[in-house]
Amino acid sequence: MVQFQKKCIKCRKNFVIVSGRRPFGICFECQKKQLEGEIKDPEMKKMFDIPEDFYKNNAFLRDIKINYLRWGKLTDKQVEAFKKSVEKMKSN
Image (cartoon, rainbow, N blue to C red):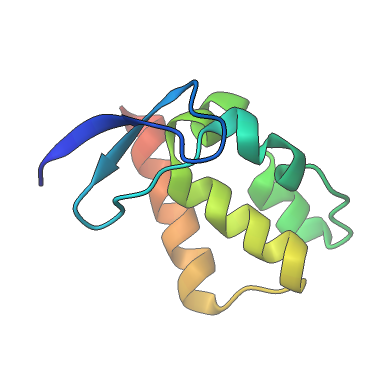
């Protein structure tokens, strides 16, 4: 898959890695406020307790956390994909 850098569509300052699947990228700094929120479920709290660098480097992880904070729940496939991505990032 071809990936390249493009400026953030919100702030137009920071560069974001985008691809054909995801042509519009938002930088971590613009999404930082959306990532802040209280997670009451202890299982989800443990799942989302990963280093900040993982969120900076992976827009998918940011999207999953934002969706959880917005809707209060995730599907089993979303949880599985999140855990799989975190394990992959830890092994690298």
